[in-house]
Length: 587
Image 1 (cartoon, rainbow, N blue to C red):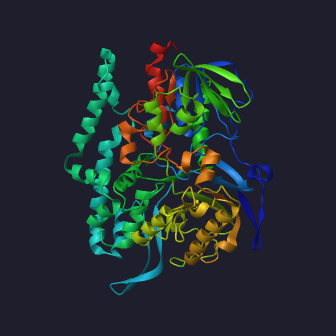
Image 2 (cartoon, rainbow, N blue to C red):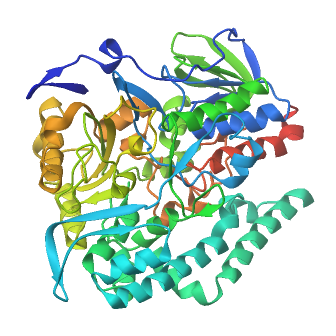
Image 3 (tube, rainbow, N blue to C red):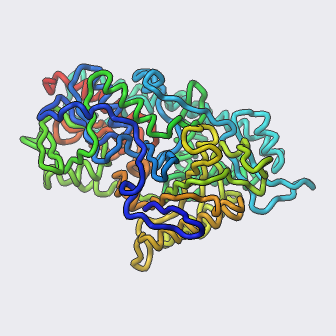
């Protein structure tokens, strides 16, 4: 539900699409007529589905993408909920998009423009600390190693010296694992099945790729093992002593995940978030001009330029099966479309439990899919403001000054890892956090196309909020607004005047993220990124090769390897799997 602030009260809207202009790029297939058959149908125009469509269309297949919403992009979407303000409504920053996808699909040519952020992270302190006789109010970090040392040294000279070593260790591990993100995982069931020589060679290549990556880890093997298995706080305690630094780093270990820094394996989520690069800059994060919908639009532009058809407002209600094969789909309006292959960008739950006819999957596969974990702590709040926030820790030089820290991810309630853990424990009891972990970004600080002059869009990625509230309560408008007010009250402590600057807000709890974007459980990754749901186990060992037990049906979304984030790798690898199967499927 979207709320507009009128003075000090809020006028409730029935639905955002009824009274607000919704911003979206023109899809471009409106002039095409929907045909009765295609070589490939992609369910869902999220970024991975669009990537699959582009790769397949470039191979000469006749591809159709069907999106249930009025706008393409899935969670990588731009919408003008408040007139004049363009929001990256779900995903909000770019880094993880794989370089191979960026290059193969010529995304720069097709309109993608990214503003690199530097600095990257800002943690204001609610209460200044006195360290060695000096008052310290915040931690600001970016790509400049010397400046990072200077900032960290305000809290701990030891940590300042260790931080460079820590970053170098993470960089070596990421470089070692990089090939895994761009190749299909080892498919364990295939190791024990009778295969053709070609299939055996493919399995050997996957094993060789895995062992090669593991061998490259070398002296970093122990640190890698700790990141994969230990609580993030144990890893961070080994390296550092200052809480503001540890808590700032810990946010990357829990972001989007219903875990705390004290959860075993939380270190992997941290590792996942440093695996990206932009324009060749490792670990860089950026804002996309026009919002995250521009990423999806650039991919769609490539696909359509090669002949793909993309249709919005075409929800798929069922996958048609015949003789253990997927042969087509049925739209909500009853329209049937036949296809030689079907790729689903939906979550594993939607794909295999909702869209397939009952009893289509083997019972053991269905049982495994049912056990896939979609727990999510995230509530996204998109806010239109009439002035830039002014933080007590680092006041603006003038009322409308855009300071370096406004361009960062601003971490609120993140001075101490205990705050994050306490917020998590509240959510586990079915309560929303009274002191939530808040990641604030202000993309209009770099991209002037998003808001009127002097105004800004503020994106709040908050946790922890459980999908199901305790005591039989639901996420009705009262509870949604009470939580949003709690978030605003927290921000107000760090940046007085923020609440009065609000022009409008859009609140998306876990059930909203599920309803609007099709994210089962509200999970932004299409399923938890835990060790038991990664690589050869994503989403299950049987389904980890993008194929399904049903011939001609493929999973191309983030529920497949290598998982969540705006990466595009799952879409690319699923398309490559289809291309490998072309002769067998007579495409």
